Image 1 (cartoon, rainbow, N blue to C red):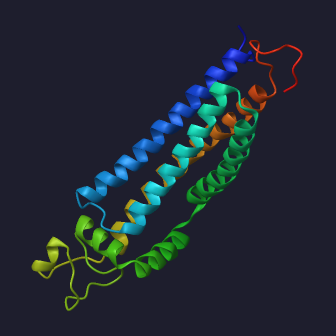
Image 2 (image 1 turned 30 degrees about the horizontal axis):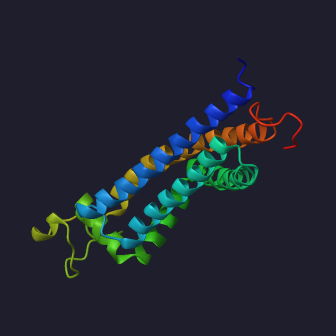
Image 3 (image 1 turned 60 degrees about the vertical axis):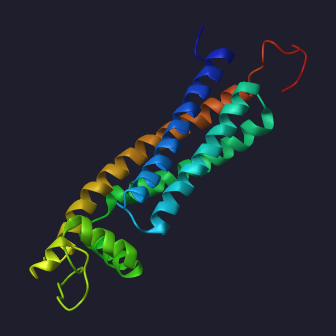
Length: 203
């Protein structure tokens, strides 16, 4: 049977949505694990990652149910939502890959000033104090603070951020193409007749 057939389209769409469900559960699990073990103390970061995971889980579940039941309404909304997610994710991934050093430094500086809990997480994990300068009079959770000889965090953050942005941009770009594949599969599958249904029925 060619892959344009009803059964093949249905199976491909089901496999794709099961993959999305696994990715969403992985996101939720990593965020909960990081919070539980104290790796991330910022509720905004944890809440954001869990929120993305729950959203992806719901979208994938809608797509899976729509594919299993060949439900026209669910498949239509799934196709629209998945296309919007593709546009956003593709744009963000391209932006991550296109950021230069000055733009990245500006974004890191703004992010550093806007979240005290994130500052503490970074200082503790990277063993540094302050963003651009180390001030021994200010409290700092980093182990090096006890000795009074700490480096500023800017250079360490920039090095980690550059690698993270490249990986995040690459992974996001890859998944954005799986999403456009999902939109195409949904469109084809939605407009195919179910061989088990009444042949004279309209879709």
